[in-house]
Image 1: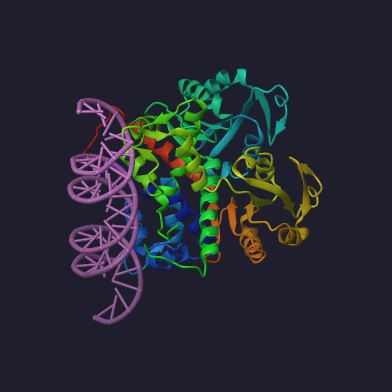
Image 2: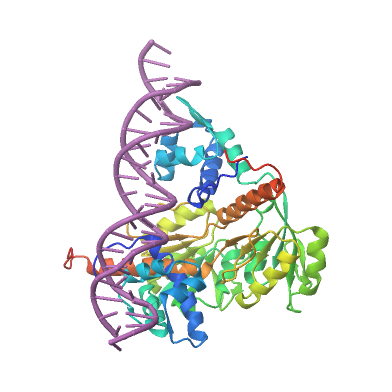
Length: 222
Length: 222
DNA sequence: TAGATTGTTAATCGATTAACAATC
DNA sequence: TAGATTGTTAATCGATTAACAATC
């Protein structure tokens, strides 16, 4: 495998391809052309072919792509064939909701612990887990060789906890805390900043309101 | 206000500016230059000035930007000064977690109802709300003039419910269901596709693993 | 006034789309 | 073989960065 970087513009589209292929598979489709897929996904066929060719020539001229094969290949590219050990740090509402999310295992993510500082929740059952006290986290992470941490702690705590976890060997974070974690080079952070997503919605709704209130009124091109 | 479209590459960065300005405000900063902000945010000063100038000349030569003023202006651009009525559809784990999320009000989002089909949860208290039966949703949406719906329902249900809500006057969706909603022109959809985010994390961790296992081994530039 | 920093134009860079020869 | 559709190169488009005159 070569060291060529593939742009994140491309790689961020892979999960969506994967999802559409999964649907096609369920529907019993055997093959799909970039053209037909492009119509379903509302992107250009050109983009699909370009994207896929970053990873290999999965298609065949005159035929298109074999659905099952392409699905499996993208799964491998995404690393969904491996198993990874995960803990959840922060057993608040979001942390608990994620702990109950059933599809982690399907993607190779094995949630094997959940931690919190609050005495009120320590000992509670969440999904199939028992909330443990935060003080037990370091030993657990080391012993179980935890690779990924889901951070659902207040933003003030996030940076400190993340740093500690990196020292304990954690390589990746699914970060729900509203801070930009600045960690060392070889650590992966995937942010889920719900509040920013919500503001995006607010912005787009506002713009819509303006357009609506303008309908029929002057439309100056200047 | 003119009809000029501002690219989403720009508008998606606004919430992050807003967040950094909020922090600066808390820290008591009165003014900030694009250069200093660029260092904090790890973007170029040029980009900051370009982005802001899409909306107006908020700065002053030789001085920079007034923190409080810029914060307020971006808040207005994002439409955070208005109040919007919101319902949550789907009182599963995520729906309940969001209902308990305290910061909605701060951003002008007033959660005034939560609905589900499951008899087991109807009547339960969630945050300050009582889960209502789905059958009562249409009347509620119309009477309360609900503008936004948060969709936390299974992906199979999402499209149908969204369509129904649009007919009832809903203008925007915060969509947590893993489907691409295809709705009419003037409807806003902001997706939170957690599973796709997770796959992104998986991809980046896999790449990291490959790099690590290669360290010290041959590094062919071809 | 001199120094700082913006707003804005021009240059560069990267991503998307179009086109088509290769080939199943 | 003829038709379909890929893989890939070239053209276009858009976004980012650099540069600098304007000005506080």
